[in-house]
Each structure stands twice: as structure tokens, then as C-alpha cells.
Amino acid sequence: MSSFATGTGLGSWPGTSARAAAEVIVGELGGGLAHLAELPGRGVGADMIGRAGALLVDIALDTAPRGYRLTGRAGAVTRRAVSLLGEDTDALEEAWEIAGLRGGGHPVKVQAPGPLTLAAQVELANGHRAITDGGALRDLAASLAEGVKTHRADLARRLDTPVVVQLDEPSLAAAVAGRLTGVTALSPVAAIDEAVATTLLDDCAETIGGEVMVHSCASDLPWNVLQRSRITALSVDCTAVEPADYDQIGAYLDSGRTVVMGLIPALAPPRRPAVEELAAAVVAITDRIGFPRSVLTRQVGISPVCGMAGATSAWARTAMGLAGKVGEVLATDPEAIAGA
Image (cartoon, rainbow, N blue to C red; front, top):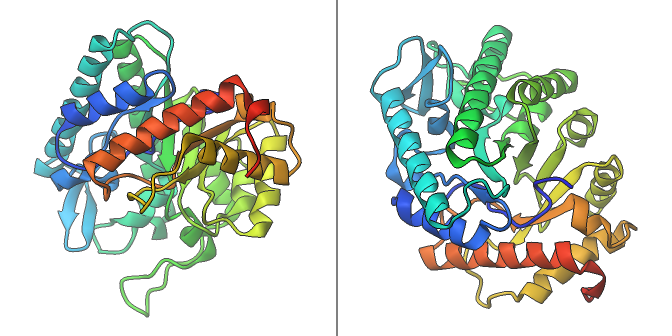
């Protein structure tokens, strides 16, 4: 059974308190798949791309007018990213210890930007996206993979538990489709070849080791890349998929891999969905594509549709509680779930 076939969150979290975030996440998801929180509300170095500044090996990040820029020497931005990641890790370790989960075998998830998204979102010294330079793209992907590998191993040692990895790829679809904008209209960003994108993802996953999942909230996923890759789990916003995507989800599951279905609202809805409603929504998808209920116990997880950074603290707690409870229902008695 995949570690991702349960209830989980997707990383980003509201507020600025690492300790408060870890307490809620471990409390609600410790029996499923708890995760290391990202708190972008803390500013530079705390968002998805800024966190890479704490992970990259022999490459550093600095701020630029439009975000982050690659640099050869670690400065204040990199030091801040390292400090914030350390704070988050310390908070998770403390919450893990208090919950009595050390050595219990429950996996934990860490997140990092994927290689395509990272290269799409950071600039070279000349202001162009790093993804426009093939050499820079490869170097950045290799540096990221080595850093995530070290991060994963360090956290596994500190928590005495397996650690799995989520690569966030919100820019993957745009990179492959050639929709990324250049510095000017005269310097367009060429589309990344699907085979190149697949190789970058596979090489990252191989270096990182263990279970690796790709997450994307995009509604137009590059299925050719994902189906051909060796990535063993995929997290998608199932409220945004088109009818044709169901066949692709079915093919991904049929290959023995795992899909984490984003179905829990990332922002508080007018009415809180019940556990039974969310479980029925998962079942409706697997029933539609013709899978037996047994697939739910081995290859299907549930999560919010996207990160929780924009939510209230109260809803973030509620959403994690729902994810944990729906994950338990899927794992224990899927045959008893009523169809939607």
C-alpha cells in the first residue's frame, strides 16, 4: 500500500506560527499522512519557491523585483530560508514527540517545488527564467534533488519514521504547453519537450529515493508526461478535472500507482461537507472509471484541492480533520460507502 493512500494536506498553511501549525497537523493527521507545514505568511524564504533556498546544494537564491534570482553565494535570503525550515522542522519534531508517534511507523510528508516549476519561477542573472537555459535547468534540478534527499533523510532520522516527498509542480502544464511568458514579448519562453520534462521528474525522484508524489492544482495536466514518468503518486484537484481526465486518472491507477484526490475545499465553504459526502465523492470517481472499491484501500488518498495558506486557521484545522477521517473510511470499509 502506498503511503499516499490516506488523508493528507498539501503543505502551505495559514498564519506564522510553526508550532501551532505542527500541533494541528500532527493532531489531525498523525494516524494518516502528516506533513511539514509551509507558512508563506512569514514572507521571503517561507513560500514554496523560497523554501528551495534552504534545500539547493551549491546554488543559492536572492530576491529579485519579480521574485527570486539564482546566485552563486548564499546571502541573507538563503540564511533566512534555512532558518525558517529549521524552525518548521523543530516544531514538527516536538509535536511528533508529544503525540508519542516516534518509531510508530506512521509516515510523514515533506514538500518542495518540482524541478520544472522551480526553474520556471526563478530568474537567471540576466532576468530570464532559469527554464530558458538548458544547462541551468539541469543543474538546478540536480541541486534540488540532492537537497531534498538530504532533507528527507534528516527528518526521517529525527522523527524515526519513514518520510515521503511531494514535488509541487503548478507550472508544469504551462512549461510543457509553452505558455510561460518571457521578460518581453520579444523573448518568448519555448515549450519544454515532454520527454525532457519526464526525464527531469524521473531523475529527481530517483535521486531523492523513497516514495515521491507530484502535485499540481492545474486543470490542464500534461498527462503524457505524467503517464510516461516513473513517479508513483499524483495529487490532483478533482473538482477541476474535465471528463477526459477521468480516463487518464483511471490509466494512472491501472498502472498500479496512487492518486490523491483533491476534494476538500481550500477555503471555508458556506456549509461544511460531511465525512460521508467526501467519501462518496471519492467513490463516485472510482465507480465512474470502473474500479472495484478495493482500490480505495491501496491506491487512493484524499486532500484539500490545494494549499491552505489562504484559509482561516479554524478551517485549516477542520479540513485536516476531514482529510484524516475520510482517509480512515476509505481504508477500513470502502464497500460500505454510499455512492454520490
